[in-house]
Length: 380
View 1 (cartoon, rainbow, N blue to C red):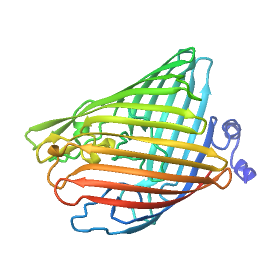
View 2 (view 1 turned 180 degrees about the horizontal axis):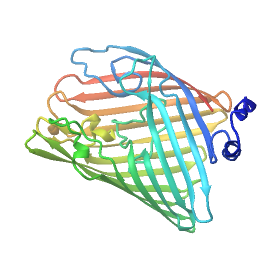
View 3 (view 1 turned 30 degrees about the vertical axis):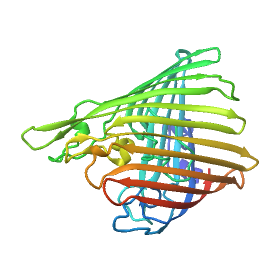
């Protein structure tokens, strides 16, 4: 095959091919996993393949369902180089198949990460440009459910941003500062415009963290973070509009207890967090024209690995101010989960997860769901 390709090239074309190699002149590493999820819910979960909240049982009580999907299959490229004496460059592209509005057996690609990083190691400073996870509330629990307690106490998602990171190290202590300007993901207003872009300026994000030994097998990390942005919601073509703030204040902690046991968790409080997986997916009440306030958090413990086994347990809650939502709105969403994951070999894992979800509504319709999920993962 290589000879056949070479016969179509002449002169400098062949020389360029030798310099660049098959993929690129850079170090490109392909990675990912195939993941199949089988689940049973004893009530109607939203959206179904995974759980974010439980649908109202005002009309459909205990409406069980069965799902089977491979949409969480994930692939990506880590790109490394070039590197000079003072600066390192790298990039990342990653996607899965949970793109919207597709048939279950014909899923669409969803972009997760796509960014480049410029790193000056001597100055302990870096700049990231592209799409990746939010700066604030950076932790996630280890769940087999695709959403990692989103809308049940864990906020933050992925969006385009320009981020700067400065690290200060002294002996065994590390202080890190991160700041970013990010794309405001809003909503379609009454004129058909996107309210985030219409605000005319980005959302600001920031986090400061301290990593210090506190007696455990590894250092403890405590972070304080937050964000602020604004949406301009046009009411008509005459220029009348409402401005909606979006903000959060967050605390995150990672605490190793002993070998094989690590605790981590987050707390949050804020308003208009729908696009950040807060407020149980509700950001603005467009009937009352007000931001929806919410607060909550999550805690999880990771145990192992012991031999080929690892275990994870945790719980989370998102508590919405019921005065801010209209009738039928979601006012509280909580979840408790536990899973066991067995490594068949270096590349294959099998896991089982049991979780209980409880969603309250303003008015009738409070719902709960017991979910059993099995996952089969083949890493490469």
